[in-house]
Image (tube, helix red, strand yellow):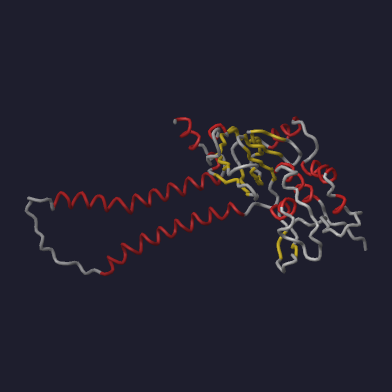
Length: 314
C-alpha cells in the first residue's frame, strides 16, 4: 500500500502536475460547498433538539437574492472546474506533429514496445525526457489498458482498432506501468517499468540495443515477402491504389464518402480491405486478417507512412 501511494504521489510530467492541481482544487471546492451544510446540520440538531426550549417563531426570510446566490455561485464554480477539466482532457487528443512515435502491442500478458529505429522492448518502455512521445497501441487479443501512474495517464487498448496516447515526461527516473483492465487470469502480472532518460542517455540506449532495421525497414521486408509490392509497387501493372504519399491524404471512397488515410484507415485496408474501397478501384484486395499479427501490421503501417510522393521535375 505504501509503495502504491508513493508511486501515485510521484509526478513525471507537466500533465501529472496539472491533474493533481485539478483534483486538489475540486476537492477544496467540494469541501467549501459541503462543509456549511454539515456544520449547520450539527448546530440545528443541537439547538432544536427535542426537550430544549427554543424560539420557533422566527419570521420567514424572503431575501430572494440570498436564495439565488447560494445556487448560482456554486454552479459557476462547478462549471469552472468542468471547463478546466475539459481543456486538460482535450489536450490529450492533440499530440504535437513532431512527437516521437512508438508502437505498442498488448497481449496476454505482456506489453511489447517498438521504437522507430526498430528497438524492441518487453514490459519496459524507455523514452527521452522533455520530448513529446506518441504511443500507437493495438491489442492482440482482449481489451487491455495501459496505465502509467506517474504520468496520470490511462488509455484502453482495444482489439480491432488503434488507440493513441501522448505525453512529455520531464523527470528522468524509473516508474511503474501496468494494465488497468482485467484481461485474464494473469492480469495482475501484466506490469512493467517506464524509464525516462536524458536525451544523451536515451541516444546511448538506442545505440546499444540490437535491431533488425528500423520499423519502416522491417515493414518494407513484409511488404515484399507477402506480395504487396506485386500490386502496389511503383512498377506494378495491376490497377491498385498508389501508396506513395497516401498517409495523411484524403481518400475518396466508392460509396461517396471522403476519409483521411491515418493509421487506422491503413490498418483496416490491410485487415478489412472490403470495408472502405477507394473510388475507381476493383474489390480485389485480399484480407490479411489471419496472416499478419498486430505487430507486423504496425510495421507495414510504418512503411506506408514513410513513403513519399515521387518528386515531379519541372
